[in-house]
Image (tube, rainbow, N blue to C red):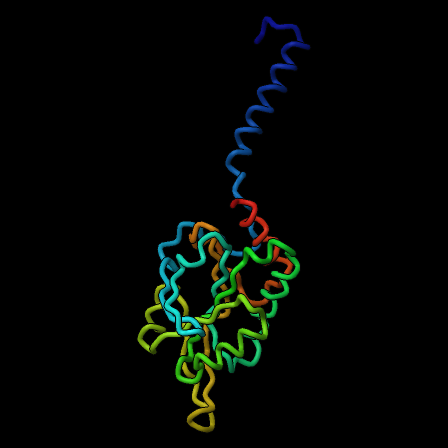
Length: 202
């Protein structure tokens, strides 16, 4: 490049710099999620339980939609209703695209969360929300697959116990692949932004 005139040399340097920048841009092209990106995780891959209407359901049933899975229980005083209400709010905010988002609530308290109770609970958030329930053993297996913690905390009477549980949701893309873990308290705007990115990939 030494024999080139200064103007020509400068234009070549600018072109080379642009090429390097473009190549570097390829590395940062992946979506900038606000939630924790767990794309490619070797967990949260399977879920097979019965819904509030008695129908067996699996994750494959929801392919084509961005699916948000949350483990909780209907008598939860704060985390569970807040999480479900935020998802319902996000679905409304997305307008027509809200129909492409599926909310799934997995109970960690199958002893008290009967199908009838789950049906009534889901109605608070939206007609298309799905609640899943299994036996105690099935619930433990599902929680293990999702790396979800839950434990019964005794109350003053036998039936007044509470449940400690993981406060976060798993988000799957339209291909049924787990992509994100969103912590409780992140807010509806952060979730909406992440869901828009996943919907844009479809």
